[in-house]
Image 1: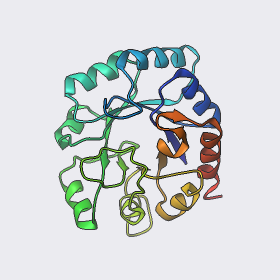
Image 2 (image 1 turned 30 degrees about the vertical axis):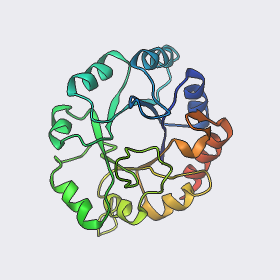
Image 3 (image 1 turned 180 degrees about the vertical axis):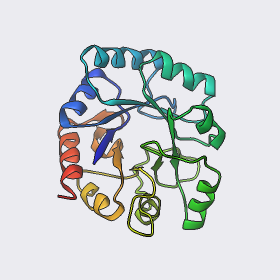
Image 4 (image 1 turned 135 degrees about the horizontal axis):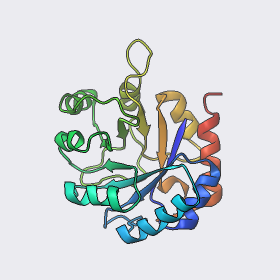
Length: 218
């Protein structure tokens, strides 16, 4: 079970997340978010992580940014992957050639299948992130995603894996184990659920979250 701690804003937060066992570290480039980070600040953090040989996957979170902006962030700011969390077209996934994955916020099973119909074939992991649907919002709301729809994306009708899914949306140290057992995702993603205040990570909550996620299927 992979764990992504998202919305990190300082080197200290990133290091504590890694110590707790995080596999992926998320850095948010969406200015309205309380977790917003400038490209320069992200580069400073990622450069230090690189110097220390920390293997965690570094993910940039983008909302309706240009392809040029995203590519520059990937190439110049020490990021491995782009999380497309806005209304980006499917063609952008194709052009980014395996360097990005898409956040989906379906409202129904029909809505989910319609979203997938427009997407290119996905074999990379993660392929998609599933978040709560809230009009006009692009994540980080603390609202719980629809676990049944997430499970429909993660698990095929024969019980095998359909897509490697990152489950996000309203996860906390208290409910993440239940979510993992219900959805069987490739990984889980948390931001507000491990914070002491908006944009400020709580080290103990991060530690308990990672432990709960990893122990859910034991």
